[in-house]
Length: 258
Image 1 (cartoon, helix red, strand yellow):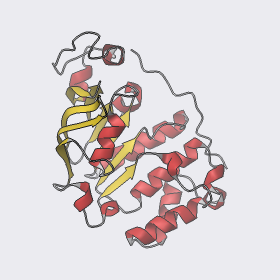
Image 2 (image 1 turned 30 degrees about the vertical axis):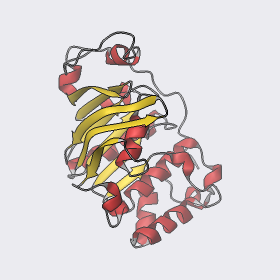
Image 3 (image 1 turned 180 degrees about the vertical axis):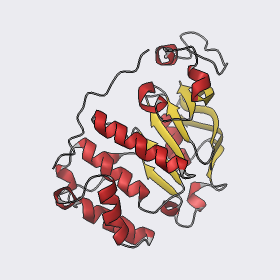
Image 4 (image 1 turned 90 degrees about the horizontal axis):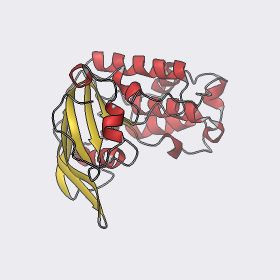
């Protein structure tokens, strides 16, 4: 359902994404793993039609995102949970999106209940939400159109451990139902517990891609192996069986209590 082919992007003299290719099949969760500044967000922006690649192409369901007649009914996107309008309530935010997507407003309450933002949280203005609550609202918004594909950039930021486990279960259920999930993160522990496949990116270049169990077999320090290096520091092997440090746990709290 998701394909990127030789994507490249430069900003001035800096090459941010360099010849990135990977696929995300239906029924799977793909972890897009790399350190901050590796090119993950730029790749996702090109995939979602928010940035034009200098070379290559990206498609969802066989066509570029911008050519989808009603993108939110095919692809649920959350690239920046903090970008929501702070003056609207959580319910108002989803109602506006429901009207744009052409889905029944009853779907709004279903999604608020799904992400545990019903009741008083739904009536609270988004500007008063914690980061974890914004992440939950962003997931609700991504799921609102009943899409076939989810593209999520660092969705666990701000979630407490219970929230992270909840999110993993939600994404696993979505994929097991035939959906396609592309999940970006800089933490191996966040994605390895749910991802069927990994795409590892560093310095704007894909360093490895394959099934999670194959990539991690016999290795427990893949983060160190990739994230502690730059392309200029020393060459990285291209084999798909590669060593990273033990994942660092998120310390910020979800704050989703009402």
